[in-house]
Amino acid sequence: MHPSKRHDPPVRVAIAGRGAELRGDVGEFDTEQILRAANGRARSKVAAAGWGGGAMALFPNRLVLRWTWDTRRDEDQAWTALRRTARDLHGSASRRGGQTTLTIPR
Image 1: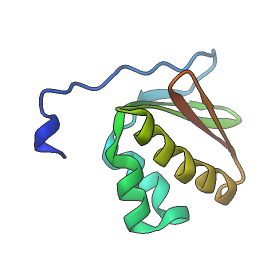
Image 2 (image 1 turned 180 degrees about the horizontal axis):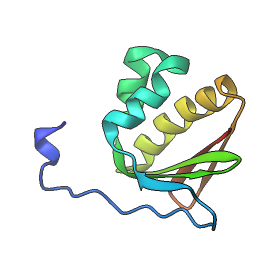
Image 3 (image 1 turned 90 degrees about the vertical axis):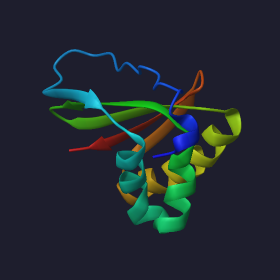
Image 4 (image 1 turned 30 degrees about the vertical axis):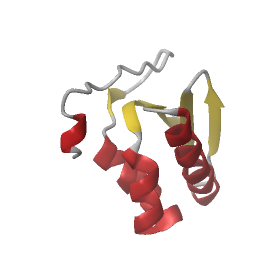
């Protein structure tokens, strides 16, 4: 999505836990779409632009999405949007070790 990042490969992000029905990667476009309803188009686009890598795991009782970001500033922008999204979806957001996590109940 960003020609200037074509030599910047995504970082692999892991989500631990047994019993996942589905696991996969979450890209920048996916991230923007997830954030859009709670943040609007412009904010979600800015928040997703610093994407460094992402993953998802669907468990019987929850969906877990986790991201890493290119810079601390990118992480801060995403964190604000993720908290709004968590509230909107009655989920939770957490931040630790340079990664942000969104958990949504099923």
